[in-house]
Length: 273
Image (cartoon, rainbow, N blue to C red; front, side, top):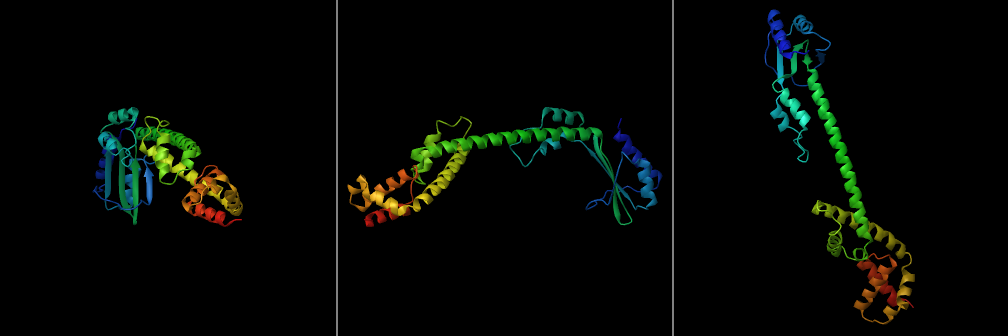
């Protein structure tokens, strides 16, 4: 069974027995040589440092602190839940126990590091990693389900004749009214915004495709409009513009035309013979 308290005592006694010195120090950068306690004994490490004439060694002993672990639990993500009970219980049971021993020194211009980590800490890390993977999977599934629902409702809204025929400004209010009875109690304003944004994109893309086809027949459409009964019954520019707009909306599967295209069709209809 691992006893890291005995290991620390063994290191301190071995350092004193060899006439080495322990000093607190910071070693910037990555060590050039890394040795692990699973494959190298404390005596072998201290003999190596002694034979390399290390001026001093720096010993760091870390202990598990549950309060610190809880405080730093996903600090950058407020949406993350609390640590799982299994992990919290393990932290409390191991509170104050040594979870890492690090011995460093300099020899021949290189930094050497000897480190020891108890197996139980690795087990805790595996529990945390497994839990994080499960949470990520759940988040991914929730995100996919949310995107599917947003797309579904946006497509429903885009097919609504009143929404298709509205302007950029009126579609927002039309869309909110349309969605109100369809949204669930836990779907707030943010979801509504995403649905409206997606529906607006669909309308814009589909309308552009429809009117691209109609532009190729603009002269033919102008003659059809001029021959229509509603056109022949009105004479003012305002009324003809309204008739032209309605005509284009019908020709494009309900998508409202731009002002520029409406005016162009009206102008061509007035000139056609």
